Image 1: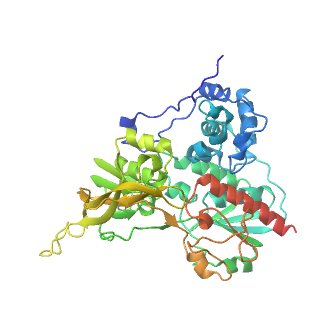
Image 2: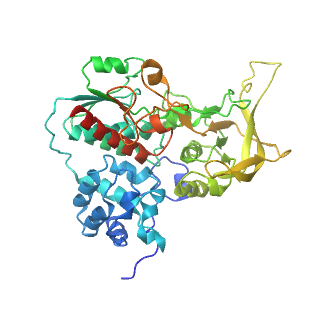
Image 3: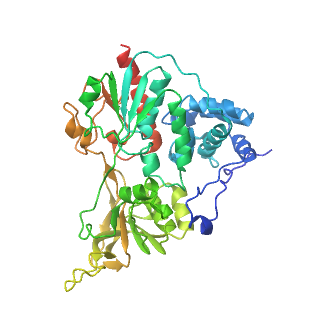
Length: 469
């Protein structure tokens, strides 16, 4: 049979249906599609795809098992490197990582590695009895601060080696950005729960509503008997532009907006948390978080949603798949536009007017692209006299986040950089404080799930070496 040049398409909900529900958009490969896609793999001897994977999954080996319909064998290979395969198969940017290295991609479309990982993990979660062999305890205790992807990866690797691991989570639910930041239609919460239940079977204890740096300090964790601490608190501090009108009612950070909808279930209408169900929404930013916020606003009933981004479509940092899904759902992209002010209703005669202080528009200026900046991206240059106002009643700022300073401010001897990220030794996650390691967005600032997992795994290996030295 001749080699199929394109990936097998992912079955999805139709755009006109999915734009009005929170069900998962991508429906997943069937067994037959998965095997057919696996057959496209050339099984290269030098395995370049593995070099593109931050957790070094032996990709050709798991795909070979899939070709042979040994699905559990394929899962075993993936699980040996990744503690969250059903999640990574959904949200990792494979197109810029493993798939970008695929030899087949030189001439044709690369193998759909992420879709195959998702298929294998989902099938395992459906048929598995959940039984595992608990490793023998080695007597050491490790505290993991934060239950996001870096913390979960670190906890899993240490638990498999016999460490008694306790994960401390500040919120009331476990999963970090996986549950509060990524919408249900892209990553169902049930998938996250199943992956975390698997972690608990290794003996990992999880304590919620514990704000390390406030209710307990890192030093107090050591005093209570922990031999090492891993900090994986993410980057949950939102950034704003500093323009006029950002304090108006109806202006959200993407973090707040998505947390209210995802973790606090504002989408179901019965939740205690209030949220604005706006008719016209502007989302400022061009990354995956901006796509998530825009598509969520649409599902909450918005009649018009704009993405406002100061560069062109070619420079959008969001995954191509997410951009395409947003366009299919009717979201309008206002590229080469930069916000300069948020406009609110003003009624100085009647301060009790219910519209007083609410958003009624966003003023933007048109841009063109100039010379490249230090990162190689062409700088947006504002065009004088091109300002105009877009009529909206809600603005969501999705222009990035930075690490929360809580732990830094409550812990001595922990070095941080000018951006608030914890300074670590490259490759190990070792911090300036003895016995303390860190990884993920708390170190790098906002990045991807798989990069955070890779950092958690590296730190777990370093902690194991440190405690057994």
